[in-house]
Picture 1: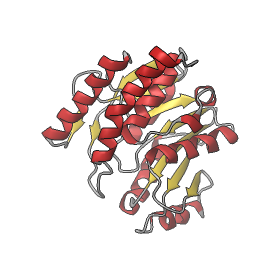
Picture 2: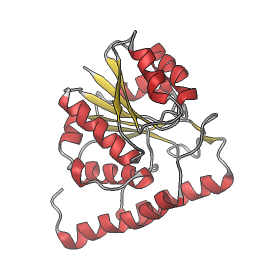
Picture 3: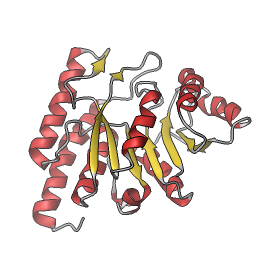
Amino acid sequence: MKTLIVIPTYNEVTNIENLIANIFQVTSDNVDLLFVDDNSPDGTAEEIKKVMATNERVHILERSRKMGLGTAYVAGFKYAINKKYDFIFEMDADLSHNPADVPRILKAMDNFDLVIGSRYLTGVNVINWPLSRLILSLWANWYTRTITGLPLQDCTAGFKCFRREVLENIDLDNIRSDGYSFQIELHWFAWKKKYRIKELPIIFTDRESGSSKMSRKVMIEAAFMVWRLKFNELFAKHKY
C-alpha cells in the first residue's frame, strides 16, 4: 500500500531537513512526501530540491505565489489521486505534528477510511500555545459541533490520513475554504458520506521556528463556513 504525506510550505526552510529525516526514520519505503510550496522567499523549495536530488521519495509542487493552505492541500490531493496512492496524509511542515505518530495512524487505517490525529480526545494535549489561542481553538470546536453536529472532538485538526476513495468522492473543486474551515469542511463531507472516521489522541507541540499562518481572516471564514454547511443540509438538499 502506497502512502503520500502532503505538506504545504511557506517559509519553512529551517524545518525541512529535520522534518524529512524524522519522517523517514519511522516510516517504510512505501511512504513518500509531497511538499506544496507557495514560492517561499526564504529558499524552502531549494532546500527540498537538495533532498530530492538524492531521495526519490521526496517530491515538490511549486506554485507561483502564496495561495493558501486549502488550495495547497487540494493540489496535493489531486496529485495523490492521479498517482494512485492508497493513503493520503495531511501534515504541517513546522514539526508541530510528531512524525512518530504516522505509523500509528497508518495502522488504524486498516479499519477506517479517515483517521484524525486529535488534540482534544483525551483532554487538552497541546504544548506551548498561549492561553488565548487554546481558548479560541476549544471554542471553535465547540461552536462547530453545536452548529453542524459533527461528532468529533477535534473538528479543526490538520493531521490526518484519508483513503484515496474518500478524496475521490469529495468534490475538491467545490471546497473554497482555507485554514481551520478547510479542515472542518473535509471532515463534514466525509461524515455525511458515511465513511468510517476514527480519532486518535496526539500531542500537538507549537512550532519552535518560523511563524504561525493563523490570521483573523481564517478565523472569520471558519465562523461563517459552518453555517453554510448547515444551510446546505437544511435548505439546499445537497446530495453528499
